Image (cartoon, rainbow, N blue to C red):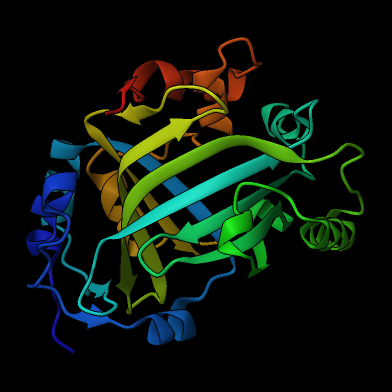
Length: 270
């Protein structure tokens, strides 16, 4: 198979040009899920200034394919995160607890499909994601059926369930390009225009940077190693927990202070 470089992709790391990816070969969703579903995986995240991302990606020589559906290669995502009034899910993450979880609805805006997802931390920091289809009209609330699914999933995964009701605490929006690296069977995503908004609050956008995330098995993938060679190291960031800390400075946030201080410039979103 011909090796396709990232040079064609490197100039598309800003929101204005995300759709212009015609030079890279496509991969369909069915094939991507077959070859690199990675529901159990290790996620490595990087908050990278746009220009640094361009420079690093332009020299990556591995095989790369881009997720394409109906001729579109950049997709809008919307996630609503749920927590208890005591913010149990957030506090477990802030304190670095081993048995932590996140609960959200994930909506693929372009296709108008929504899912209820439960993410838990498994062995060796592997993330396990389970989900069910969810009514689009219910994406900002927890239904009785949804709560039953959450409780059953958490009981099986970590042996515990939230003691208090679950309500929406944070919404995130962004545009995503998904990449498939066939040589390693891994995938990566580039998120631009990442925006956070709390209930009743004003939206804040990550200014001048993208969130690049690699998703592979326990070992680092070729893209990770390439980024490290270019001085780009993983950032401690969670769209849920770091976003909550950024919007609510009174919350304990020691785990994300370095990211909040050095790599996250949030400005009011239009």
